[in-house]
Length: 384
Image (tube, rainbow, N blue to C red; front, side, top):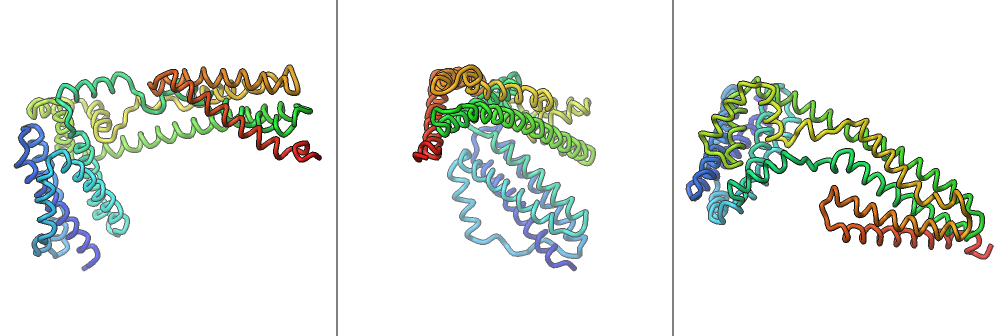
């Protein structure tokens, strides 16, 4: 008999038993009927986890531990329950996250595929429980619905899609190349500014290609992760359809629907397998196909915007030289920082003047530091 496997299974059984007891004690003191029902359902889910571990222990010729819970754990649960649902839920969410990480680590040490699958399965369900708990805040049912439908209408993730990529690309290109141009302008000490022009063009090209390739690889990786998670969720639905249906109903309850309404909606969703799959993936994992933009489109917008932002500080050096070019570069770059700061509010939602002022100030300070460093390192700055 593998004693390490037995120990892991017994410890896992104890965790689930303790979790079920905590949820039930918390439910017994919860006046909100909807929250009470959810807590009781979570307790039932923990019981199911414990039964899975118990069944595997018996297959191995062992059994759950017979020792009772220690007085310290009992006291800690008693105190936790009396701190109120809101605080207890936060602590339970942290506990579910810890258990999830623990099951993942234990699964990695297992040799038998069925033990790995058992622990990984419980791990995923613990993540769902944590997500359910994170949704049990103090919002009213109407506020929950408003928040949900607002999020469905306007997906602000991923920095506002390609528009966000363009804005941040222009921001990065402008900031990076303005610093390069300022530093090289200081280094040239108002003499031959050809080096400033060449450095600015090289910096613009490097920044644009770096931003574009980064945007492409990032979005492509996100989509690949999404597709992998969808396939994993599809397999879970095939293996445990009733359990997945129950979990979706829990999420509907958290949005303000009654238990009967949530169960009916979840039941109807099961009749449309692909829709059910996408819905459960979004509710459990926060994943939606619409939140993963086209990698090529985002790469193009990021590259083009970074190039446009980067070329702005360089433009005066195409037509002028010496201090005239430096001053003009400072003027148009400062104005561009202000305008990009205003545009950033499309994505961030911040006050436009605060964003513009902050962007301008950061750009000017960065340029001043770069110019000073360049001047300090230049041969003329050393009198050479």
